[in-house]
Image: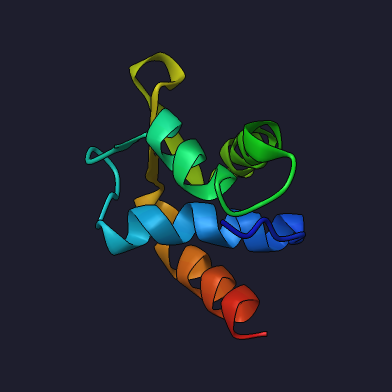
Length: 92
């Protein structure tokens, strides 16, 4: 298992890319704990950094929270911006 040092933008892109691949927009959601565990295995400073990035994405309205903060989905109103952000970060 390799732990990489990645930027916050790359973490945010990965956070949004996983629900995108599973088509979790609007009312279809993904558990936060599952998402944190998937990503924390690959980076340093584990889940705290991933959870902070999720909170930032919620404040920026890219991600919607459901069930008292236990699940998240992508904001369908910002779908074009989300896809462009993911492509710009992952490609560079």
